[in-house]
Length: 251
Image (tube, rainbow, N blue to C red; front, side):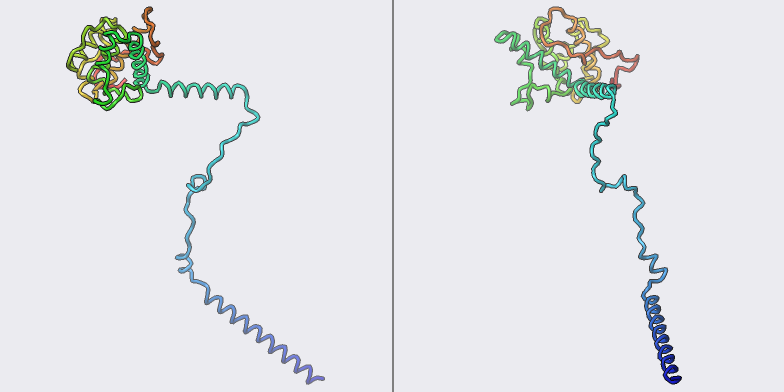
């Protein structure tokens, strides 16, 4: 019995030593496979320090739904803002407003006086699509298209056919005619411009030309006998220029 007990203990001790040896071997293999501190530093790649809110890969933010706590004043404010944006869109470009009115006035006179001499006089001043590469269209017209004075005189003849018996044959003369007729139509001489402000294209001081056109439109607005297209509100007279600020300063 004692021999059997001793043999059992011996076997248990040997088994325990074997387990310890296996554990030590496994630990040594793990230590060997583990990278050093220097290798870990090389392998470490931290994520970029960019907030997820500004990431280009973020999904698009859905439009916020209306809150159930919105008041009537909020709705009125939103409607007002929408209306303001429409006004700004419609009248944000004063040149676009003017050219729209110019085309309407000229077309009105061509229809009202169809077949008469005044129509031929106006048509001779309008651009020829085949020759000039542009149509008499408000969306195509730009300030530089006024540099030869033809469209300016077409506007005057359309407004007051008797104000201009004959247009000059050169751009310089036509622009001088325009300013002279504007003064005869009660436009303040200080609101006129000089030929070098407009010609040659591109215009050096288009804001002075626009100021004169606004002043002319203001006079037309007061004509009781004018039955053509009404003057847009956006063509109200511009504020006077400060002394010494006529040339080279945008309005």
